[in-house]
Length: 255
Image 1 (tube, rainbow, N blue to C red):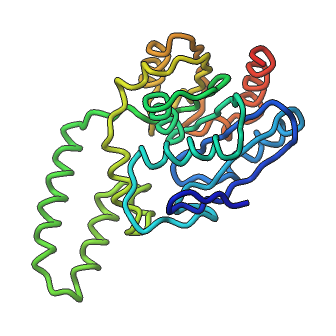
Image 2 (cartoon, rainbow, N blue to C red):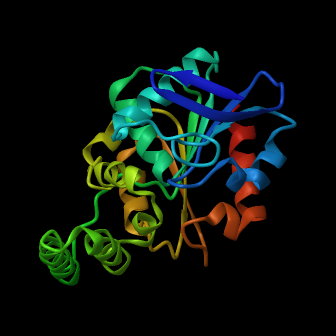
C-alpha cells in the first residue's frame, strides 16, 4: 500500500486486524523485510504497520535533501492519517532518531516504546577520525581542479576509501540527507521521552555503542534496559528467538 503526503509517496504494509496497534520504525537503509521474524510472532495479536523510508525498498526519494524533522513529520502524519490509535512503537537504530524528534516536537497518544540499539547521540571523533576527516577534505579540494572527465571518478574513489560503508552505498542524491542526519546530536532531546520504555541493546554493537544505551536508560525516567549477550547492532536478528520472547513478555505485561 502507498501513503502520500506532501512530496512523499511511501510504501507500507499492514498485518493483522486486532485492536492493539504496533508501529515499527526500521533502521537506516533497512526495509520492512528486516523485521519479518518479529512480525510473524506479533501479527496474531496486534495490528502492525511498517514502512520503507524514502529512497529504500519501494519508496522513492523526493527531489530535495531531507533532515530528521522531515522524517518525524512523515511518521506523525502517517499515524494521524491511518488512525493508528495508542500504538506501541518499536524502533531500531535510525528509527530511534525519529522517535526522539517525535517526542520533542509533538504530543502523541502512544502506549509505550521498545527501542533497539537506537541512534541519536553523536559520537566524539577520535584523533584518527579527525586526521582522516582533514585528509579527505584536502584530497577532495584537490579533486575540484581535475578535468571534468576525471573528477567524478576521483571523488567517488575518495568516498569509497574515506566514507563509512553506509555512506558509500548510498546514491549521490541521498548522501546529503545522510550527513544531515548523522551530524545532528539529539542527546539532550532524549529527556523528552515520557512513556514506559523497554530498551534492548546488543552487547557487541559497534555502530551504536553500549555506553549510549546506558545513557538513554538513565535519561528516560520509565525505562527498563536489557543487554543481549554476544549480539551486535541487530539483536532482533542475531538472537531472534530470545529477543522476540523479551518483546512478547513486555507487551503482555503492558497491554
